[in-house]
Length: 156
Ligand code: ADP
Ligand code: MG
Image 1: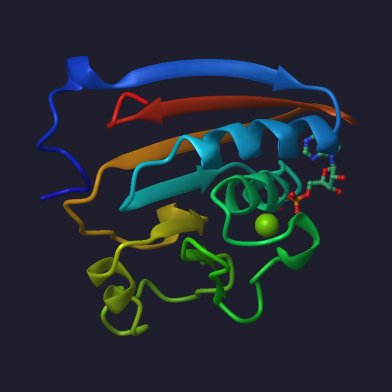
Image 2: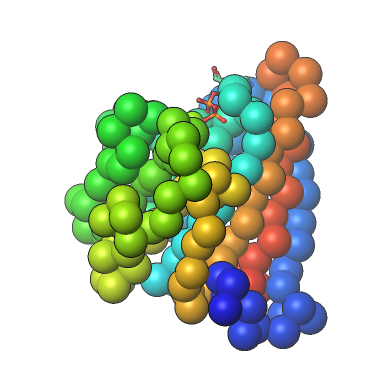
């Protein structure tokens, strides 16, 4: 079963906003993070520089797991773990070359805990989980403007 597909389509809440600075994106991420019910899986798509890591700074800090400045790109390490109070795993699959699965990478265990899992470049891998999924698409509009579209299984 593909991620979260047991939830009827009608229950999915969708919204789209524009932000005009990295700070605004972080602030929006903080709102998302503060409203999360765990477990939560957040899939971030969008080209390089679209703002996925910037948004994650806000989400992790809003969830109470990290200070904004602690959150950096896990491009070379694959996964960062933040756990001040809540536990947030931040994964970046950009450098995953061959199509590998979660089990091979040892990442499936992340889904056995009460946590928030945030994945950049989720399209690089097949994901299987029953967790509710929030899909966030970021678009580069112009130098300082980003479009952020959210589809949320949990309807939050
Ligand atoms: P990604 O993780 O998608 O590759 P990053 O978050 O690492 O992207 O980088 C986004 C870049 O775009 C940063 O350099 C940031 O300062 C810049 N930026 C400019 N405007 C915005 C905005 N409105 N929201 C997010 N980032 C922005
Ligand atoms: Mg990134």
